[in-house]
Length: 161
Image (tube, rainbow, N blue to C red; front, side):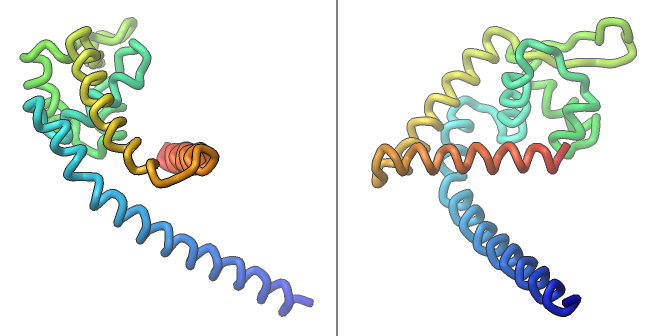
């Protein structure tokens, strides 16, 4: 009995590994093809990819200023790396620095109105490009694909937290 359950579990682990390998190849290929379009949409506005990542993160914070330490962890940068990334955006009025309420030792960043507008412009451009990927599918398939990717994104977010 023990051998059977071991074989069953080993089979499941192998299947998971095989699916993981297939997913890795598919995502890697998709991202490799998508990156130039996203890079073009971002660079056209004279910001770097890391600056876009920061703008996007702040846009998702729902008007809540994010502490620099949280941003550094999420972006996998040092706090000084976040500062170097943020400084040009602050100078352009796209993001704002503030101190955390109740603890003035903690520096936070938030999106300005100009930053929110730029985020919207770039997001719209990327959405048009990404929407074109779905053109070859039926409406039902499109919905199924988007739901599956949304679910995958939530799972990835849970793993990274």
